[in-house]
Image (cartoon, rainbow, N blue to C red; front, side, top):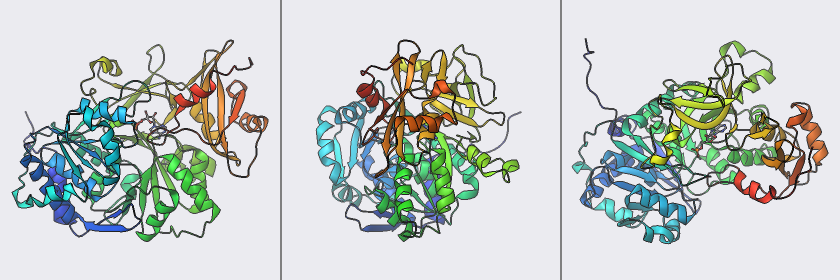
Length: 534
Ligand code: AMP
């Protein structure tokens, strides 16, 4: 016997209608490059999204055609997040921090036919557009306005899409090899939004009364779903535009009374330094907390926000391939009154999967690891918002197991409660004397030293042990620490063979386009130098 419920497709026009019907007056604020603010609301943004959908069809674009964006976070970008898929087209967000050569590859491999671009990014577009099939260019506040003015929202009809049709695509930043395209469907996007809303602690933290400021760029990993999440809940949203330095963000938090924000740890490390230097300067009493992911936030940073500034860090894990949010961490109820150190330990883990995401981890021999918090294996996952393949990249098919799980490339341990602890990327884990050393664990510990601003740990080849850890450290202004002091500091928490034999002190750690440590660059810089045998 089959169930007798409606065949109701999970598509983005539903979210659009909900936002304009119930939350039309709620504000959408964008910080402009000149520091000013642009104010609009859901009614306007959804009306303009419909105009965009109608206008794109008027250009002769067909269902499934790709429309790219090369933009910072602002309300026009949100219009593309809705207007492009609600017209039956596919939104392709281009990462403006990538090299033009990569952008040329990504835009042409993705088959983009049109692009919406910020005026300040036109020079970047000019460097690669010649190598793509892009026929139409619309500059925000210029040709984009003309495009919209020629179309009426009243002409928009819900294209009644199949929920499995593509809504958006996003390329992984690809520190090795060519970037790979992930194609999100309407269904996966709607379910991902539900998933983020329903996993603890976000299910308690986020609601219509909130004001979100996604620092996470809309050109990376779907902006972690925040534009859709905000629209589904009816929360006010504040877009930071190109101004993502700590002081501009803190000004936005105060002026717009932001309650919830999201971004990678490097952003929060910068903000923490400003807050620590002058705790009274910014009144963050409205703020509840922040979702932090993309790389592991140091435990010391989580503690500092909580203890010194009363702010909760909600730690989440995910990847472009998982839409991206796949797990969040929340303190188990029975540990609510545990000692502070235990509570912090849990907050620093990557947590348990959101509902409908399943995980397992397998060791080097392919056996599932024991969930004892010790054994390490590669994390695999599956679920309705996990990619089933890369776009037109058959040579990467081995990222999926024969029984349909996605191999994340993250090395993890999982504890008895199912809490995931990311130990490393498989390419970054340090293999020393037949054992694995987690570069991430060493980095987090080092960043807990009072003199250390940032620390990255990489593997360097070693004749005797195969590989040994090398610490690359940025000291805080005016602070000093020697290699021996740092080793002693770590010795309290790690086995002797984990301790880096060598430290390099640098002014800055190179970062990827999305603010993660660029370990390939560090390896190029330091690996060539000989390492003393230990
Ligand atoms: P991307 O697809 O560029 O967002 O990168 C995804 C990768 O970032 C994951 O496979 C992890 O290696 C890393 N990552 C994401 N979130 C976290 C986290 N909370 N802790 C540690 N690593 C993370």
